[in-house]
Length: 54
Image (cartoon, rainbow, N blue to C red; front, side):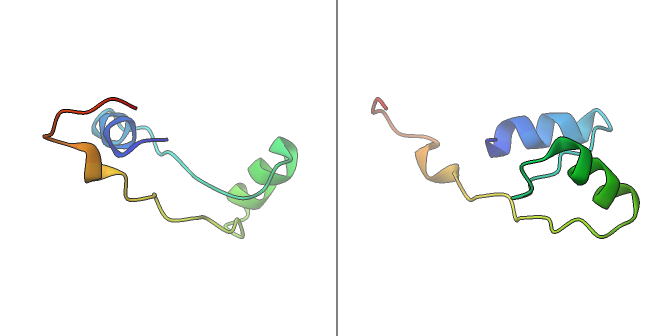
């Protein structure tokens, strides 16, 4: 997930969670019990404001 999408969702009151958990049921259960290991949002702002293609 990019920073732009993350910020747009936050502005709309939607909490985005990045985790290494690959089982959705386990992720939801851990989130609800406040024990989910969350990963930081990757810094992908390096492509802002210059012209090149990916």
